[in-house]
Image (cartoon, rainbow, N blue to C red):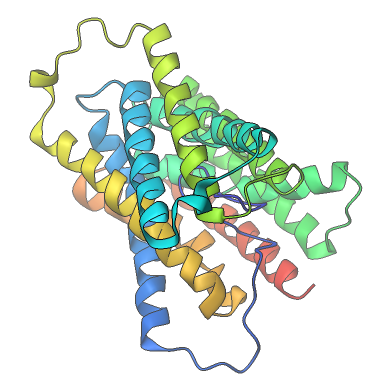
Length: 319
C-alpha cells in the first residue's frame, strides 16, 4: 500500500514497484498460486463491496473493514517481527496517516459510496484508469514517462469517456460514475505522494497505519453523514456480514501478503498483469453473481481502458 502507482481497491503497484526479479528465473508453482490469489481475490473485492452496501452504510462499513484489518495486520507484524517493527517517528506516522486518508477515505471510501449507485463491474473498469492519472502526475512533476505511457494515457481517458456514457444516458446514476472518477484521482495523488514523503521503513507496518487512519477517516465521514441514524445491526443481512469478513481477511490481508511476496519472488512484468486482469474478473463476477448488465459502452470502454493499462505497464517494464 505504499507504492507509487496503484488502484483504489488493491492499494498496490502498477508501475515503478520497488523490486524486480532477475531475468531467467523459473516461475514456480507457488508464484502461480500467489498470482491466482491476486487475480481472483482483488478482482472479487468490487463484488464484495457491492454486497456489503446492500444492507450496510458505505462509509461506516468501510471504516470497520479497514480499522479491523489494520489492527490485525499490526498484531501480525508485532508477532512475527517484534514490537520494534511498528516503531515510527511522528513524521512517518503523520505521512502514513495522510496516505491512508487519501487512499482509503478519498479513494476506496468514495468507491464504496459509488457502488450504492453503479454496478461493481463498471466501478472496477473506471478504477482501472488510475495508472493513466499517475503518468499525468509524474509528467506534471518533471518526470518523463515513455511515449508508450502517453499513448496509454490517451487510451485510458478515451475508455473513461466511453464508460461514462451509461451515466449520461441514464442507465446508471451519473453521480456514482463521477464519484468513482473522483476516487481514482484521490487514489492516484495518494499513490504518487507515498514515495515522496517520509514513510515507515517497514512496508507492512506502514500499511497497518494507513488502514487504521483511513478507516478512522471513513468512520468519521460516515458519522458526519448521519449513516448511523436508522441503522441497526439486526437489519444487516448474513451475506453482507460474510462479504465484509471476506473483504477484511482476503481482500485486505491475504491478497496483500501474496502481492508483497510476489514482488520479491516473481518478474515484475508478470506481477503487473493483475492491473488488467482484475477489472475483467470484476465484470465477469458482477454479471454472473449479481446479474449486472454488460452493455456495449461498458464492454467497449473496458477493452479500451485495459488496453491503455497494458500499454502503460509494457512501457514501464522496459524502462
